[in-house]
Each structure stands twice: as C-alpha cells, then as structure tokens.
Length: 131
Ligand SMILES: [Zn+2]
Image 1 (cartoon, rainbow, N blue to C red):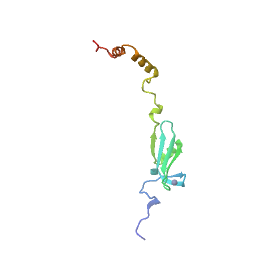
Image 2: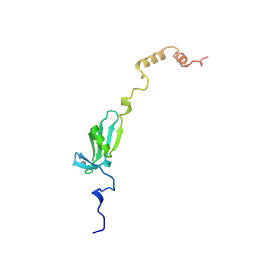
Image 3: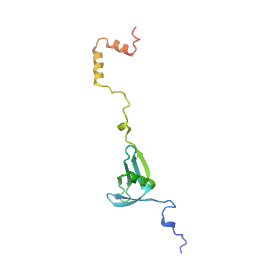
C-alpha cells in the first residue's frame, strides 16, 4: 500500500462537476471540451444561436451554429452565455429630422442671390440688431 487514498470517483476536479461537451473541429474531428472552453452566443434580436470554442487539438477557433435547443443545453451545462444585439443603427428608427435635402440647398442658394439677403437672414434670426 502506498498510503495514498484513491481519488474519489475518478473526477479530476475537486468536487466540481464537469460537463464534457463533444464538439467537432473541422481539422481534428471530434474533440472533448468542458463548459469553460466554450462560449455560447445568442442574438437577442432573432434568436440565432452559435457557439465557439478553441480547439484543444489544433488551437484553432471553431464557430458553429446552434439551435435554440442546443443553446439551452449548453447553458444548462454551465457554458457562458453571451447575448448580443445587432448594431442599433440597423433596426432603430431614425431619430433625426429630415436630412438637409437638395431643395433646401436650392432655397438657400436662391436666398443668397437675392438682394438684401443679409437683411432677410437677420430678420429670420431675430433682426433686432439693425437699427
Ligand atoms: Zn482542431
């Protein structure tokens, strides 16, 4: 007897349950990962899921599509979930007023060509200065 107690349960981690995730790398084929190796990404806008991991075999970064069910399973297994949104500009309604159109440019140009455009402009702005 060497005096060393046998490791309980054959679990290499101290009491922490480790979920083994099987995934496949395009270069290495099937690889085994733990939840810590994987990141799940879920798009908040259209529920598209994917997961990515760094392959333990070739150290390459692998990204795969994941159905909502797979996303749930991975998250239940302790995988970090990263929810992201499409860039706001893509879906957000315009906040500004109408943009400066060509008609506005023409109008301004016509104003500049007319006599007394400065008076006209000053009158528009408030005009109490010319006395
Ligand atoms: Zn690989």
